[in-house]
Image (cartoon, rainbow, N blue to C red; front, side):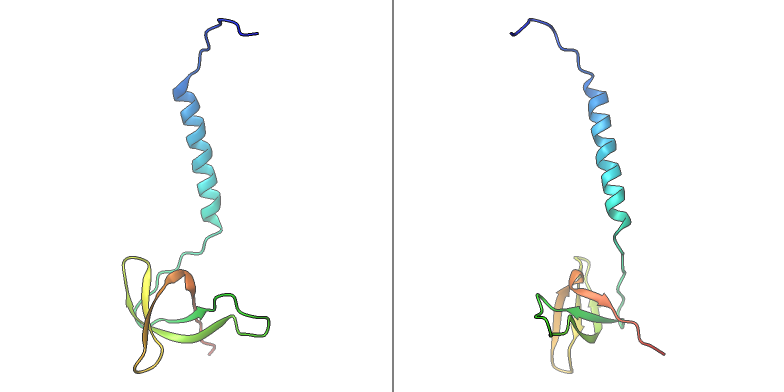
Length: 97
């Protein structure tokens, strides 16, 4: 049955609680991320897209030629071939000494 009772809602409080939940979820998700700043001359491994069972997961190492502001880098495969790839397809390469 519908009753003509006014509903009192504090919209500012409701909005603040929702925003607090969103901020907390964002903070927890960013804790798992590893941020990497790439520089010219760094060596990186290029991740393979959906490799088969026995195929290597990465190729490389390749040298970074240029770092772009939109989240891409230009890597040099050899003397004649350069490729511009997204940083999500890269992993830093650490040489063993």
